[in-house]
Length: 333
Ligand code: DCP
Ligand code: MG
Ligand code: MN
Picture 1 (cartoon, rainbow, N blue to C red):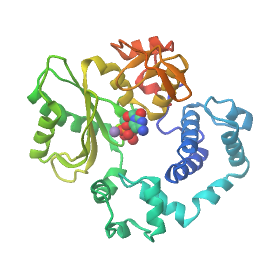
Picture 2 (spheres, rainbow, N blue to C red):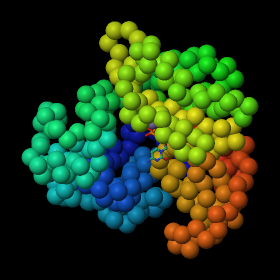
Picture 3 (cartoon, helix red, strand yellow):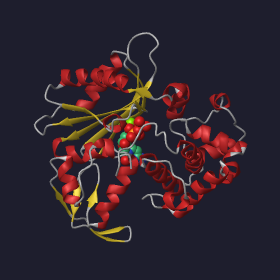
C-alpha cells in the first residue's frame, strides 16, 4: 500500500460525496455497505493521483465496480444522484446526527426520529436516555472535535505519571490514530502492559487517582473485563482554562498479549478487518488476545480452536501471517 495522506489534495470532492453515503449507510444500520464505502474511500485517499476515469477508479484495490461507477458519475456531472436520494431527507439527516451521540446506534436513532425527536435539544428532554447517552449529549461538541497530537501527548503524560506512581515497571504506550501518525485524533488510546510478576489491580487504582485529581470527569464503560485484558472508556479534561473534554480509552493487558493488543488498538478498524481476513484464509485467527494457528472453520463455526502461537512483536505477527511488515503509518486500510 502507498502512504496515506491526511488531507489528500487529490480526489477530495468525490471523497466528500462518498463519505456522505458511507455515513448515511452507517447510521441506518447498513454496516456492510458502509464498510465497503469506507474501504474504498481509504483506498482512494491513499491513491496518489487525481482519478480521471472509471477504468482508473476500478483498478484501485478496494474500489469495486459500483463505487467506481459513482466516481465516474461524479467526474461527468460533479454530482451523485444517490446522495440526494439517501442523504437529502430530513429523516436521514436527523438519524445521522443522533448516531453521533456516544452510545446511540442506528436502531435507537431511528426510533427517536419516529417518536418525533428532531434536534439535540429535543433529546435532552427525552426521558429514556441511558447514562452513556446523557454524557454523550452533555459533551457532544467537545467529543465531535478532533484534537491535535500535542494534546494527546499531554493527556497521555498525565495517565502515564499516575500509572507509574502505582507501579513503576508498567509499560505505557499511545496507540490508535496517534500511533498511525494522524495529525488529529478523535480520542486518546492508551495501552498499559503489565509484567506477569505484577499482581496489583492497576486499573481501579489508576482511575481512582485520575478521578480524585479531577482529570477523569465521566465514565462511559467502567472497566470491562475480557479474559485477562481490561478496558476503560471515559472522558477526561486537562487542567487549566479553556480545555475541552476529551475521550480517553485505557487498555490494560498482560505481557504475553502485548503485540496482538498493540496491533489491535493501533488499528485502523479497517486494517484490523483486512488482516483478520488474511489470518482466516490461512487457517489462523487473530484477535487482540493472540494469534491462533491450526484453526478449522466450517462457515462461521470453529471446528477446531487451534493453538496459540507466540507473538513477541508486531513484526512477528506479520511474519507468521506471511505478509510484509507495515509500519503504523501504513495501516489506514
Ligand atoms: N477498533 C477496531 N474495531 C472497532 C473499533 C476500534 O478494531 N470497531 C480498534 C482499531 C482502532 C482502535 O481500536 O484503530 C482504536 O479505536 P478508536 O475508535 O479510538 O479509533 P482510532 O484511534 O483509529 O481513530 P480516532 O482518531 O477516531 O480515535
Ligand atoms: Mg482513537
Ligand atoms: Mn479509542
